[in-house]
Image (cartoon, rainbow over all chains, first blue to last red; front, side, top):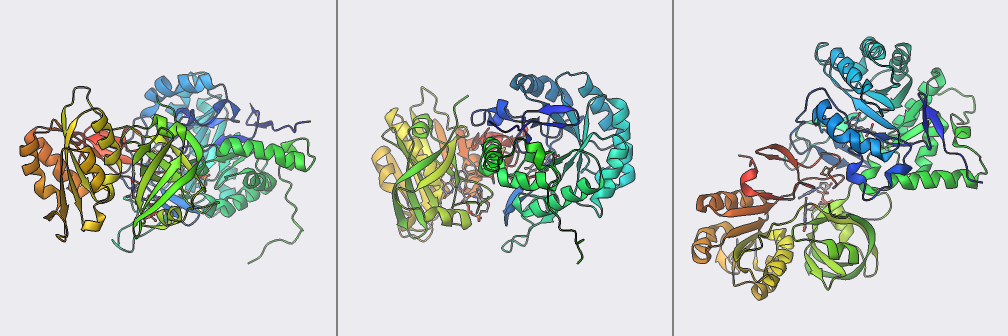
Length: 311
Length: 260
Ligand SMILES: Cc1cc2nc3c(=O)[nH]c(=O)nc-3n(C[C@H](O)[C@H](O)[C@H](O)COP(=O)(O)OP(=O)(O)OC[C@H]3O[C@@H](n4cnc5c(N)ncnc54)[C@H](O)[C@@H]3O)c2cc1C
Ligand SMILES: Cc1cc2nc3c(=O)[nH]c(=O)nc-3n(C[C@H](O)[C@H](O)[C@H](O)COP(=O)(O)O)c2cc1C
Ligand code: FES
């Protein structure tokens, strides 16, 4: 018998726990030649903002040990074009569509939620709170529990759609931020966004990214992400979408054992455009090899031997 | 839209043209059949999980309908790993990607300007121009005589080829762009195609504009997906940022906003 890969997150039924990480998969269309999009658990589209954004100057990326830095700068064509151009394609794919949004102010998020609520076929909204809040002097929403609470609460009142809050790891206590998100009405959390990093070219003495620093992703951040998933899962009763260096089924199993209900694949799509599909197949094989019936039986099943960690 | 393939291509041949510059022949009917001059392949270098990103290489030549070649210089970790492949190894390639040099059906004459390893895509283009009976001239620039890769191929395919070397070991002593005015006057090309260092491309673009000749250049940007999804590879153009992997790598020279 085939194991059951289906999971439920924020009230959305997924046929398997594998999604695409925002910003790494476009809106799916670009991968359609290579990936059978219908097989995905869900598609998470790249961040969309109210107005079009130009993004940062190049170079926007560089490879680093076991990872990469990016500073794309949320380049996108704005919500109007997204609804008009990308949604019809996404609808046709027939898998849950999660739309990731960002703004400079709470009112931007609220307006985006309103707009998306009336589109139909949006399964959930993911709030990217890693961007600077202009009113709060540029500190990222996601770095302050009070700001998270405010933006999530306002979105909660603006839409009936499930809300997923995507948390930044660039904080002292991710649990504190997650608690604020859940308290304000988040249905699920995504962990983690990229880790702030920098790389400098020893020939030119210049940063390798035009914007100086950027977000680190890929296998290099996986242990950070797994730890954060585990911490949040231990403290809070909220479904978690785990991400950060997920490249294959065994990586996914790590996140699920730590407490994630689903995983998202980001940077791994670049080296292996079929990483999501290979992961789904691999997960099935993993469960078969262990005689397990359902992926849900793995969630949070890490065996801790009791001793609490000290430094 | 054209199909994109991701496959394991067998290495059918490998040559080290000079130390650190390699030409590798890969078997793939799909990519070879679909490829157009100017397009590139995105290659997973090395084995296992060593590399986070693929490396882009122009399609250098198409061979007998079922194989193609890439020509590359070892400049870092990825190209180094790729240079270590052996005959009959399989290389993970994604392609063909990007747009291509535009060849108008009624084109009758052209000028190719190649700088260094920028010769790579221009050989595929030269083959295509030759088979379409487009008369072309070429200026090939390199630092030294040994690095005038494929010079004999150009000679065979084109009308007249001008070599330049920075050390004067062959042809004109200097840079490819030194000869461009003279060769344009002599050959009156309807179109200029160029690939090489960005500084050279800018000069070619300026001269083409001054003569009022259509000019297409192939540019390089760091790439992640190669598919137009991640927005890593932007080029500044007159209509804002455009993607080198999808809208390019070939751009009309007047579209690009060059760095001062
Ligand atoms: C469309 C296109 C076609 C190309 N065709 C050829 C070709 O035919 N022959 C050839 O020798 N080279 C070509 N290049 C350049 C080639 O991609 C780089 O030399 C190669 O990526 C270097 O990788 P590395 O790991 O050895 O170098 P490293 O410097 O260690 O690479 C570090 C990172 O920077 C990227 N990078 C470094 N240099 C470049 C560059 N010039 N352009 C884009 N990304 C770069 C790498 O891909 C990698 O992600 C092409 C580039 C592009 C964009
Ligand atoms: C090139 C690139 C672009 C990204 N763009 C976005 C984005 O627009 N919105 C967002 O919420 N996260 C974005 N991310 C973060 C990813 O969605 C993901 O959280 C992070 O990369 C960790 O996962 P990974 O290691 O599997 O890539 C981006 C990541 C990369 C590498
Ligand atoms: S490399 Fe991803 S968009 Fe060009």
